[in-house]
Image (cartoon, rainbow, N blue to C red; front, side, top):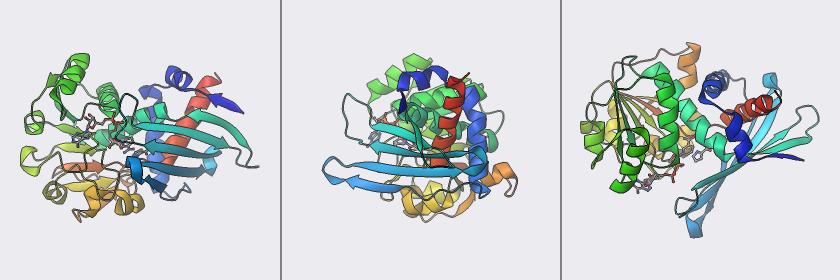
Length: 299
Ligand SMILES: NC(=O)C1=CN([C@@H]2O[C@H](COP(=O)(O)OP(=O)(O)OC[C@H]3O[C@@H](n4cnc5c(N)ncnc54)[C@H](O)[C@@H]3O)[C@@H](O)[C@H]2O)C=CC1
Ligand SMILES: O=C([O-])C1=[NH+]CCC1
């Protein structure tokens, strides 16, 4: 069977091609055009990692796929996330190919945040703050700056030298504290593997937009409950958020809408308060990204 390695995926996939596909994926998901259970997760206690199984069917796209993703936050010297995506024939169920899923996970997550930011942030957003300095921090910088012209980009990480490294790469400013990084920021991205909040209510300017991307476990949260409860909360999937998101579960915050509902126009984009987009990652994002990669490779 054909295997498409990471460097091939990386060679063809761009944010300009991926961002519109992610918008379509989110709309289809919130319009019941996708068959997708909440992912199954196997916790690997000894190393505090997990394996997630993420199947999705989009009949209108002729796409049946599943991603297998691992997140081992204690990995040192190798990435914390690894993944493969398998695609199947929708008429026969015959497996057609296996593709690396790490590049897709990295890029589609940031592409989804970029779409959410397009709908929820103020169009004149000037200051971007990134909390975390790993794979998703870099990817989010690339995706968000492909849509917005920020005057200033700030980075905070729990290890200052890591923040400095990333800030040097992107001509941004490294900050010693998260509160300094987010002061007056219009768009904030939280991309840490922290199990406890890294972002507090009193640091955030009213009306800012937050992409809350880490904390994909029910007992982990990145956003302080007071901030969750004083913001308008959007999610990628309601069903997933009430099962997987510690930010939602531990704060008991009300979910206003799925971001796909805002895109479809079935819910208004409510922007008067601070907005939080809680991202967990959807199988349909991976399935349609894999379909896109396949199409780009066949050109
Ligand atoms: N919503 C989604 O679709 C996806 C979410 N994620 C999540 O995004 C987060 C970042 O992922 P990557 O950048 O790939 O991981 P990474 O391992 O490359 O980077 C993690 C970052 O978190 C920081 N960190 C770790 N523990 C911390 C703590 N206790 N306090 C503060 N900072 C801490 C590290 O210093 C590093 O900057 C993870 O939580 C991951 O599970 C990742 C992929 C998809
Ligand atoms: O959707 C995804 O692939 C992931 N979400 C959190 C960790 C990996």
